[in-house]
Length: 200
Image (cartoon, rainbow, N blue to C red; front, side, top):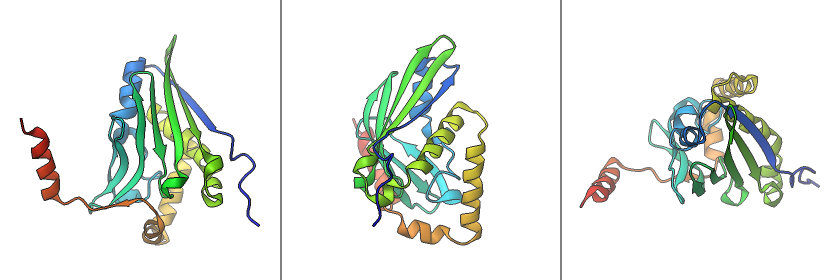
């Protein structure tokens, strides 16, 4: 019988030091999330991804949007305390009940800021989702390296893996089996909402 990994209850902890102040580091992680996130190797759609969106507010959504308008929900912002802390759920291609609880803190140090990421909640996940824990340990390391602008052999590995998915024609099946697909947003609906929000 399948069992959850023995380390499922142990949080994933990763960190990176940057030369920026906590304010700049926080801003880059949240508001500029889509600019630094390595989307080709760390997304559902790979090269189909047009943008990664991180709505920097409590309750804001985190999702990937493809060139054809397809969107997949990654998670939701649960805490936003600039410039000290941001927390969010992260489910990627899994069910909402299998979402990680991710917390990122920004600690001032002499040379800049230490960015510390903790991913919890693995013990409450389904066995299938919990088995992805080791891969996510690598994912968060690669993501923080990308955020800090550092080279990463792990990120290169994920790019190769994503390329193989495309070459073997597995991107379509992977997307079909991924959970979290969002309704396609029509341009007219988007325009209407924008006009409404800008109305006096």
